[in-house]
Image (cartoon, rainbow, N blue to C red):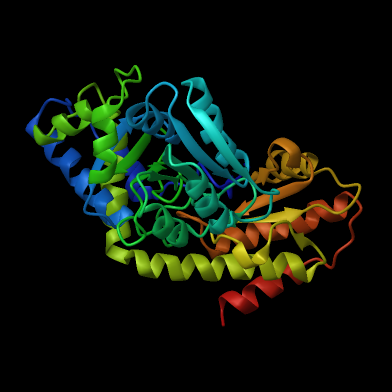
Length: 379
């Protein structure tokens, strides 16, 4: 019987307690019992986001929350900045273009971080900018952006700052209020340790002013409907009830451990993983001065196809890691250390990577990377 190990940056493994919560008999979504759970989740997400702002919930993946942010904040022809350093930064641009929003794009080489000065300069050059869209942790490249500095720049302008922290929330330090983030989005299937299907948005008072002026078409994704429904302890439409119950349990676990402790543990797992892969001669793909703690991007040796490495690990050993996306397809692989992934999961993943690399002709001493990982994690 094959065991399965999930080391991808979403979905991530689900703790047994969370899975058990999801498997409970389903509640009707118009009952007081569900209403209390729903309101508890909204309040719990304020802790996750570190905010006193309104938090809204959508039944849909993180991309639904991204699209909802665009349609609720903006109107036809509005101008925005999209600061992108990878595949998910580019997604902001695609969503804006779908709604005829004019995009002023800041783009850096994949593997590099956004320079906050570029955002500042573009805001000074164009006083019509309504919003700045960017990513917290860019999952496709492993980069973490300096959102704190960008927030300080944007706060003194008419623009709002909108940040995708779908992969960063919980495991990478993220302070919505302290960093002047007007809209933050995340999803259930990463640091929140739940199955995919829910997303959350925090909305500042500055952002609500834009929501009131927005004329973009919207119905299911209407922030005002969502906000009004929370006052009545219910959702405007049928939610993913069992997922809400699961997230309720996950937030309880997160609060019990504390975000600060989770940040520390994830950072150590990330450092140990990077040390391990470098010990066998592999290179980290991105700029290590700006590398995130949620995923390690590993450049594949010459003549080794990363897609084949990912496929072999999954099919022969039941180990799922992520491959490269878009222009990085086949060139890198990515090992996550977030959510419910722990040190023993990573030992299995690193061991499997050693075996598969040897199979494809990149000869390494078996156990060397595992030893390097264990030395760090046990120090």
